[in-house]
Image (cartoon, rainbow, N blue to C red):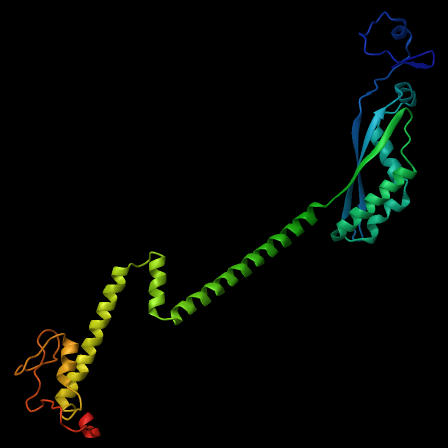
Length: 286
């Protein structure tokens, strides 16, 4: 824009000709951007605590409609013009004083409603320009973000801890149920998880059975040695055969000693089928 004879003249987009009368006679030159642009006005609203403030950003879309008027007005800082326009609303200045910094969501609602209503009733007036309100944003302070981040992380940690404890309790109850059902169910769980195989279970069962027979044979041998079975009403020979896995024929002397060299039945201690029941006295047991 060139100011000639007290009037602003639009030179246009043509190449600047230094010999042009408009250029030669101009007493002032202005550059006016005619493309639409957005402008952010940043404001700070005090909260109820002097240590904190709300950071407000109001976004405007600006479009030059009459570059002559803009140049004539000598407008240099549109940002300052729009910011001053917002501060003229006295109620807007005091919105944050009724709230703590933690009440940012409520402040966002009130600030947006207030600025929108104010700009609708009292729109910004800039000669030769159209100014429209686009958005109102209230940003949380860095201190508030850090505080809420710590609270959120702590809450998440507690939630994870509760889930871990709940899962552990469920596992304990499940294993307790399995173990209370007996070793067969525990072995079945081990096989399903490939922690043990059927061969290992069979070997352990054979060992347990052999140990059971060994203990029973030891007890029976002691009873035979003490004479507790001299008048028993069952056939000890059949019990001996079951425990040792051997078959004894007539005239064979059975034995239940340890390893493969069992001790022989004491002489005179052969059981008979027709003898009455015999209950040992306490002296014999000792």
